[in-house]
Length: 352
Image 1 (tube, rainbow, N blue to C red):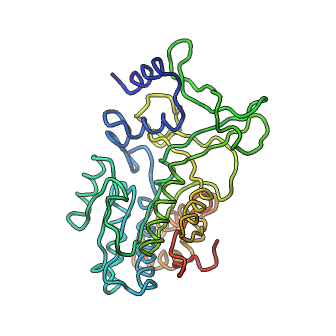
Image 2 (image 1 turned 30 degrees about the vertical axis):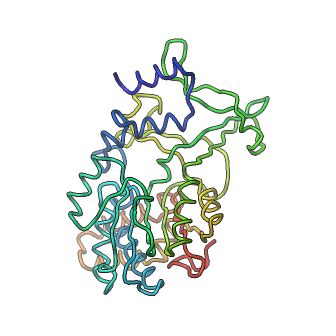
């Protein structure tokens, strides 16, 4: 039985499921889910992330982590956590950079929050015994300041979709068509009175899971101190639009086609994440990825790499453009900082 057959049987027996339930099954079903069984990251896989574009990305996050540790007063122990660490490339670059900050690497108790067994194996091969693993942030010991990184994690958290019809809001669901194939449809929703006003045809996405992560990270930082970076593509302001997409071999495909065999994502809802963090006592701010990397010195780092390897000038220039240009990752991707109210992490001094 495939995941498609399992979902079809579930829907036939119990009725349509929400888009959020569909995403969760496609990504995390223990037998057929994408991340549970076949995550394919990189040029030869289904998608590529910023740490794979260039070492500069991870190096500058390492600089940010070291500077944050220093601003916290260089505590003897800090919990360095990456959530959703992919193949371990990003943490590898962060740890290499921390070696150049006296005392920082010795203070770092490194944890990876990862639910995918295949990805844990890749991370172990790359990072060795320097790290420990947890299934969730709650499993990571508390009681010391936190420095947390999560790159392209929010977009993988499930979201519900609501569609404004001529007579009011309805929830978009996944059901079966007349031929027994998976199909999108609409169902009445008790949440209608809580949704914003909109013109017919507008789609509103809501991710309780994203907001819950903002609250969880915010509460941990409010209690123990520290700072977190959540980096993803998404909205700077609340808005409308259907952002659900499926990627297979770097191409967009129908989300309902071959469930579990493609990466499903939605845009990060940064306003909701930041509001949830603030509600539990943390502070929050964000910049575009281009702004953040520029403030952290990516231009100077690119110049240094070119000086060391002039034959790679073109490659390094293209990598820099990919990361910071407004028509590439620089504008669409945002960097959200959640931090202790009594200090501001590097690059966010005048951000809100």
